[in-house]
Length: 148
Ligand code: 4NP
Image (cartoon, rainbow, N blue to C red; front, side, top):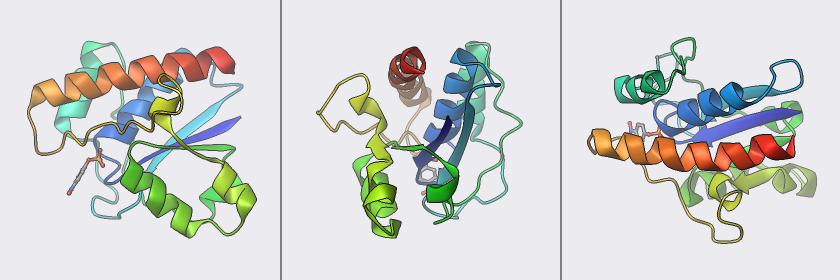
């Protein structure tokens, strides 16, 4: 099973989603990666605030570097989780066929089915936003891990 987490910058939300899911599954059976729909932060570490909230929860995400989502990701992953509705629409625009499109899901639909709730973008906010994002993603990843 190969799972890709996607947000806009791949520095705040999707690196947390990647780190949290990795902490809940065996690395032998599941490959987890993350990417951003923009290439704004290509090659850089996750945001300090994401590193901090992960670390407070005993998760190290400092091995991650931002990268842009590419069309090949549809071939390389079984499931592609969008953090928000804008990411979801941008990924779908790149899909080549129905099989590609069927791989794309809103991550919070795992914890709140059919509600299409977005993980709020915490980039311009304070530390509380990152804590909130962590908790939402932890809940969703718990459901994902329980199904694997
Ligand atoms: P992310 O957050 O999509 O969760 O990584 C953002 C990071 C950077 C920007 C926006 C959102 N930015 O505009 O640079």
